[in-house]
Length: 264
Image 1 (cartoon, rainbow, N blue to C red):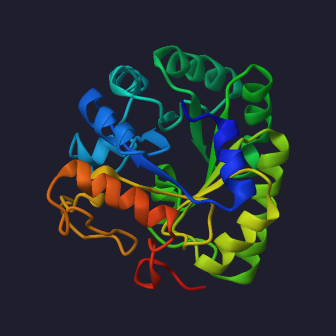
Image 2: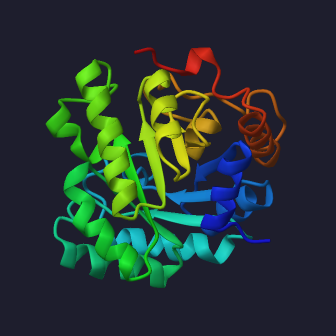
């Protein structure tokens, strides 16, 4: 059976962890979905891992549409989530138009990075039938504003603000939340504070789901390896087995382990 938003909600209600993984083409989409990954994310991370940029900012809508279409052809039942690139949702009107393009290409949900300024846009998308994942914490499209890739929410004020924003975005209509590079205790608090499923990356084991960039999960990351990454290919004999091992580790909550998380 195909994974839907209701599937993710049921996982949360039952306390069962679910897995997400990036894919950017039909072949990987088929491998990943057949291995049991619940959510395929076509991330604007493709700007770094496929195109060689030093950030996600150069990725365009046309490029995202191309990759979403490719993934949709190979998918075998996973929920497809697509990133909206930098400044393609700066206004509600732009967000509606660009989200429609991604949905037509085969996405089941779009992902936006930001805080409470997105509430009107999320409401408008939700009212028009576009499921939304709201991305909080380290939001890579804001790298220049942050002054680098840094853990977010470490002081109490920032933590309280993130919890408040998470609740506001859910109230606006966000169906899923994604927390990146957030201290594990804060991620746990947010996961408990909202009814929406929460996906973590570098956010500890207490979120409802986990996501990794597939290149990181396979140990083929170039440059500095992020703390939250584990190479699942090293102990398995194939890409398929590595993905299956990742799915199992997420479900039994053996990943992420202590060494993959950030403290407050």
